[in-house]
Length: 482
Image 1 (spheres, rainbow, N blue to C red):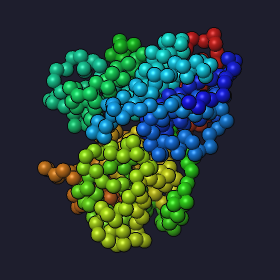
Image 2 (image 1 turned 30 degrees about the vertical axis):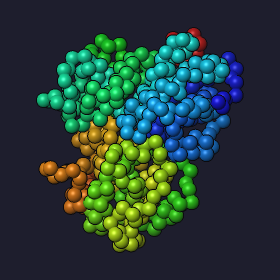
Image 3 (image 1 turned 120 degrees about the vertical axis):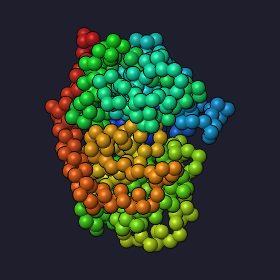
Image 4 (image 1 turned 90 degrees about the horizontal axis):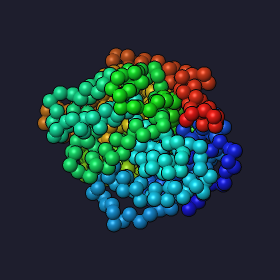
């Protein structure tokens, strides 16, 4: 086990504990950086190394981190007899976290007992350790405020609803928030009889045990769910902790590889807002049939594009979750014959992984086909890029609906009756709509306005900056209640 240097009891020291997966690692790492750079804290970033992806390892150990931020690698555990490739994603994460955190109390003691422990939603064992060591524990909730409101309501649903949530005749009425259509419910709660639900619910039901909940959002983006959590009688009744929207926490700086630099040079030669950036998230995959239809639709659209492609999987939409950045494949083996040659000059195919922020912030990126994971959604809005919503797993369907129907920065393709994939004609339609249609111009204008709003939230004195500052002040002031 590699521990950070010892801390003086007089130092302002916190610990941050994410669960595995880039969608959790990235925002909590950015949060840790903010504590160090802007608020004078020393931070131990506790890293679960068991089954860590290549991308996770590279990010935490190949990137220059600010002085005062130390990565603490927990020793890998042998889970070979406990997990397998057929296990659903949250069940597998749950087992890995449970085995990895058996030494957490010892680690925190060796680190000098930090003033606060900030945990990911799937690391609720931290509540028990925090209570044991008298360390206040805060939850960093990586999805949206809207999904946080749903999650806080979930234990009531579990208690009051008979049968499966997916069979409810009407949308779920989340107190004070927009109803959630049953087809938008996340995968983990669609079958209450399996281990996936048991692990998922076992973690989220403990959210109210936190001393506070950090949310990766800002006031102007999600005013309705934030107001509901703070003021609706339901959330007051269940003793909801204070919520702190602390910004759009995204990668502000990202190392650009030599391969990325080549593609960025190609972008430099394209007209402004003319390129569609296509990436299925950190662990997402399409089916083989969908990849073929998507390629044909993209070619028919005649639009410029950069497509981060992964080997398709008919087994799971999250097939590369535990192997992000590590899969080596030949796109020509599964793309339509001569697709790369026919689109050369107008499009670029990137294998497996790319520096997403570098591409999104480029002036010529005019659209983003995204799985609508919350991190990618925030990155898109931060840089004012409109979205083609292509949800794959987890809460992404609910995010896609919110982005398209409530916030107005996304468009969703429509699948034909009885179809299992989006057809090439629909893909051509939606790509043209976003990149050159009048509706696309309206969506792009809304995205640009949100970009301005996000920037204001991050400024010193902005709502997100001040929200985090208030909590940090309490941590530093030993006489203040935490």
